[in-house]
Image 1 (cartoon, one colour):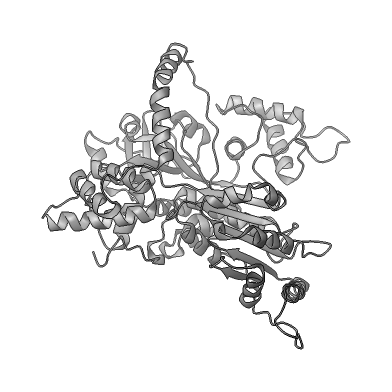
Image 2 (cartoon, rainbow, N blue to C red; image 1 turned 180 degrees about the vertical axis):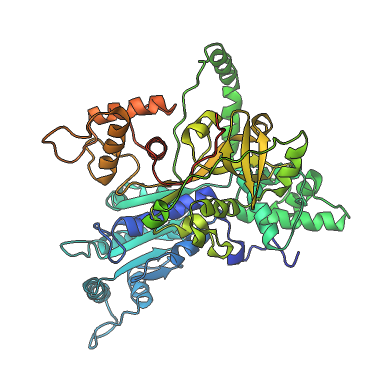
Length: 558
């Protein structure tokens, strides 16, 4: 390796965006852009956006990405030391915005002087079509009276919109602080909030592999599987703790002449880094006790479930995890389905060789998928995270962890399969074809056929793809919703069931009880959860059923 892969310095080259980080970033961007706080956007703006997470979970990483994607015309004030009085805070905000107080003020400026100057500055920016965002880090250290003053700052407004957007970033104590009765008015003004949890076991492995790759490492990981499992448990999935433990473990393996880090080396490193007998936090211990107490109930429930298991298990709901994205309509309209390709099925043992060729970084797979969608700008390895690069487009990165092969076949579009690698670290395969007994994977410019039986031993239902977002779509559309997304929904259903989208004399389509029942009928026919709620999977299936634009999954001729 060319450098230390597990330094705790905030080197942007080692940026790792897990699904949780992507979702947290989406909430922040929605709070600023989706609420109308960005220049030129619609909405009322204002209010608070809240991001919390334990120490070392990556809040700073999210904030860095957020700052890089702040829209043009949006000025940011960043406060990193919130242990201030009300007057000191107002002074710091004015300094960050480069606001000078009116000349002639006698004596030390008062809080009113700062607020008047800030209000004049915000009105001037609003008049010029620009906006302002205040970010406060380590916000759990804010005093109650300072938080109340921040709430009052959100009262600075015109007849059309609020003038200041405030983003609070802090540790979990911040949520407890805002739950206090005297801060209820502030809590009611939080328009978007997200708690950044620790990494899962699979994400921890991806994180370790990512940092090693950036540092120049290639080949198998220098950690065996028990060591990776132990690292995740002792580090609790916290990136900073993972860095400390992995760095010390590599040093210990080198000192003892070992070629790979094993569990014994990890345990010794943990005692040196975290102290003797590092244990999970109290909450985790309580959960373990609850889990042991519930084990008997779980076994009973599992036995009952096996005896009563239906022949066809119900489909599971899917959850979008990344921000809405757009792609030029001309690029979508120019796409045509890929013709079928006949391939020789893989021979026994070839699956292991295949796994060694697959990328460990999901962004590599996203870029390969972008090529199928004729998006060369996203396919460029220097373009950064493809899903984040799609922020101003009409496509969205979408990921489900509970899909089946029949649902893949019904969906009929290429996507990314997350497979279990030989060393426990996930690898990512681009699925481009699906027959009765085999799947076709794309590896660079070549195709490889794999038997579904062999694939089933490595795949647990994790599937990712792009989907075309209907104009005006929002998750959890409420009863009575109208707009372009509902019009598209009614039109596509009408094409499939042969009924008119609207009755004569009616206005725009409405998500009422009748339309929801038509949605349920379509969802049942497609093997989806028949809840009547049109989500991403429903719209994707409608696109496939009505011949919408986009690449198609290759299938057998019969």
